[in-house]
Structures are given as structure tokens and as C-alpha cells.
Length: 238
Image: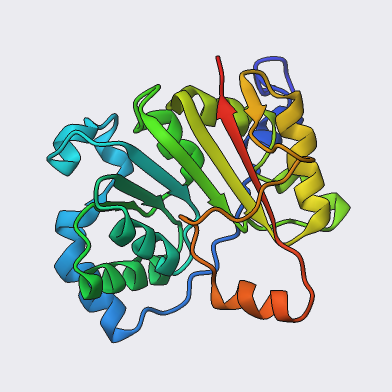
């Protein structure tokens, strides 16, 4: 290969840039989910193509904003939005059936203070969310990528933490939860090394599940079986 044909960036750097924290396992939508997408996405959906958004314009109100990354089927996110109508909520999820299910449940509960993205959270944070605009960022039960060779896919790492910090208001909270103890320890290690955050725990590194995070059926079953769940809440301090 001639010098003119050689890539301008190392192959390893290009490969690393393409590593994602999720795998797109796109199942088929149910009829109800498809109907919800058709009916409610025009009013509740946001797209990456819109670019940087004006939160007050998007919601039609000035209110604290909570953003959840990877909301799954959206049940707990909708319940939180229903329980805290004085706040506005944004959810980000890559899987279509989950987005459809979330829209269905939001309609069922009459929730209007919720907007959704179906896109990669890293790109949404970078391109769409204003700096210092969020009161809380939530990351519940992300894929732990428990095999050592997959640890590079874990979302809780230096670059992502810095992005979350940039979008949080001063004093804003970054709340994580996981049912994998080793991942919980990894989260603590990464967060303690990150600039601009302090752990809100008063004893040890973890906090009790806060009232605003609903207890899922999966989590309740895990408790009955003696499985642990670890909550971490860090505050942006500079």
C-alpha cells in the first residue's frame, strides 16, 4: 500500500470509536406497540436529526428535567413521570418494541410530561441535550458485559461519565443501579476516579433504593431469592 492509500488514523482507533455498549436485538412489534408508535410518536417522539433541543419548547413548560438512558420497556419510567408531574422526563432507548411499549403505557396512564428518543444515548447526549440542563440522569440495570473481554463495551467509563457531567446542572444527580455486584464495584471505581462528582452515600459506596425509583417485578423476585441490587447516586459538584 502506498503512503497515499494508507488510512490517516490508526485502525485500532477507528475500531475503538465504533464500540457500542448495546447490541441491537430488534424484535417484532406487537400490533399495540405499532399503533402506539403511529398515534403517539408524533407528539412524544424526538429525533437525533432535530439536533440541539430547547427543553422548555419541547415540553411547553419550564421544569426540572430527568433523563433516563436505556429504559427497556418503559414501565418504571412512565410510573416515575406519572408520580412526579412537576418534572419533565426524557427517555432514550434503541429498541423499537420498548419504545412502542413505553408509549402504550404512557397513554394508558395519561402521562404527558415524557418525551422519547429511539437512538444511541451517546449521540443524543452529545448532539441534542443542552449543557448544564438536567437535574437527574438515570442509568438502571445497564448490560453488565460480565465477560472480561467485553468490559470495553460497558457504558460506565471515563468518556461517558464526562458527557453526563457536562449535561447535568451543578448539584444534579447521576443515579445508577445494577444487579451485578462486580459491575457495581466497577461503577464505583470509575465514578470515584472521575472529576466533578461526589458520592452521596453516607455509609460505604451505595445508597438504599430511593423512593422515586420503582421496584420492578424482576427486582422484587431477585430480593426474594436473596439477590442483591446496588444503587449509586453521585452529585455534580463542579
